[in-house]
Length: 122
Image (cartoon, rainbow, N blue to C red; front, top):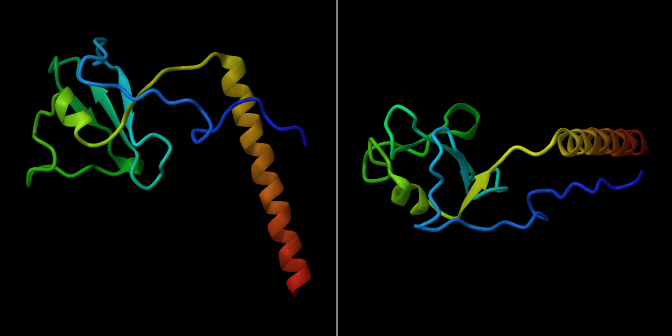
């Protein structure tokens, strides 16, 4: 199968943001430790509490409140202190579709490999 031209997070060039690079738009989204599923955190700038950033919970897990880990109302410096920060932005529809299709093809390929191993190992 032809490989997708869409880079994976490990292949994509990542420019880490610094103290003077804080996105100014309300609702901006950044990732700390982008591409590492074990430590990645997704943060969103607050529209109601301007100048503050809050982590998304659920599937990414909360980074821990209190105990010095994350202040109640984190600012940009608190986000930067957690690790390398990458600004996330939407890609065009074609890029999204190519990445989705490549991911589906890879999943089918992995399932076929696993089913082949199960048959040969039985």
